[in-house]
Image (cartoon, rainbow, N blue to C red; front, side, top):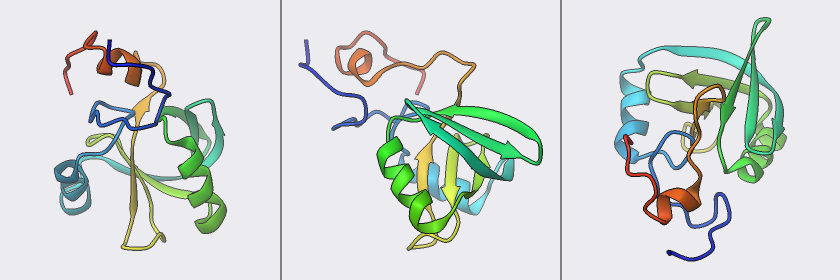
Length: 123
């Protein structure tokens, strides 16, 4: 057993809903697959709700505390690139802040299950 891991703390997984790999972030920036602009309408217990002009879609991410801080500072506008599983906050420093996301309808694998070796992919 890898020990007790709280969601989002010391997670190094690049599975959807976890940390964005730097290559994934670069590809999403340079060659986006399916970007959509919207506004975050809710962040609760790892679920992020985004309004795409009346269509509400839910995503998972375990860094919601950090995301809330960015939203408080930079506003609710986001770009979601579902093709690369990336949510970006456009006006943040350095161009963008990246958060890996995954539609809430799909199975989310917790940090603990990944750390304990109970899930090996696909990443």
